[in-house]
Length: 343
Ligand code: CUA
Image (tube, rainbow, N blue to C red; front, side, top):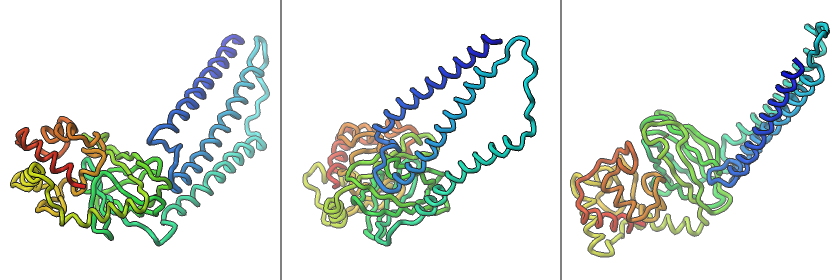
């Protein structure tokens, strides 16, 4: 009996130590990762991390206190041969009060800031907001700036320090919008409009992804939030607004545009401002050449990857709704040139 108790205690302490080391190593590694909630880059994520930290520290405290008492008890009060039955304390009012009041106090300490922040983050802190309509699709994201008259996809450009209000809808099934370094998740639900806001404190690229299983390519439904200095953002907006004056820079690009606009190809599903292509089934490609990725954040936007995508979308992204088009290698070269000229 003596032997099995100390063995148990040893096992408990080894498991606790291993869990602690694993958690610390994991925590340190996670803080470096591009999608870490432990590296907040805006006020919303910072507020949420403070709440998470409070809960986490309280939980660690409880773990240490309860674990220590357990270990001490297991050693100190272990049964020895010939011991009588210990004193029974069933129905001890003092004990009952203590273990009711302490958890109650802990819950209050967690609940007060939780409720405060839940309501505090529900509304943007100012009226000076950039409005963006987010629409989730299987398996990509559409970003519309209603006040600017711009629509883009999979790369949400915002000015640094600007409060951005997102109103969020879904075209098909439930998705979840998550940019861990800027804000917590928000579900994107058919026939319902959800809203949230975020701000990026520093210029940079913040990785996001769909966080709700939504079908074959759920894991490939990624996106980026690109936070730009105000002047750079304004330049992008100006570029987008002057798209109607776009002229093909060379013959290859002109041929690519002609293929893009011909019957039964790209134009049926995609929009490119300044051309006859005005489809809305697939992503708006008007600034495709300035995007860093293709296929919803799946691959770097290189000519090679774009060729592979045009040859057979499903091979690159399982389940992709874009059909495989009967394009020759020459057609694909021309389309790549045209698409990469769209900035
Ligand atoms: Cu959209 Cu998962």
